[in-house]
Image 1 (tube, rainbow, N blue to C red):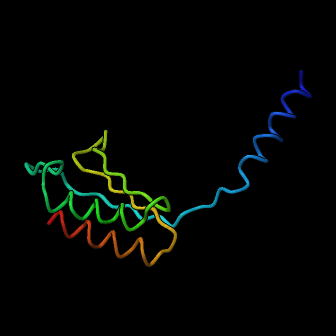
Image 2 (image 1 turned 60 degrees about the vertical axis):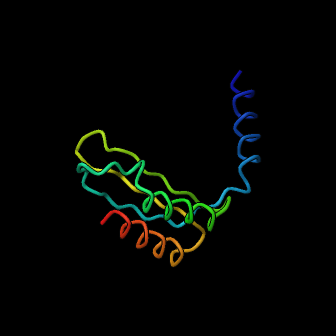
Length: 94
């Protein structure tokens, strides 16, 4: 039984050879009366970010469970690209 577990670990490791880490930046935005889900300015810049990254990055916006803020996470292939999109998304919340 122990041998089977070792074989599964080796197979899983072989499946993960194409995985690489993305550059990542996070920031928080205070929640206020603004409905960010229907704000066209915010949605436009988030969609532009997603299109720019294609399958090589992502944008995640979620409400924090412990305080009244939104968590914004941007991941992409280069630090400079991630930093630029974080700047644009943060500006859209102002």
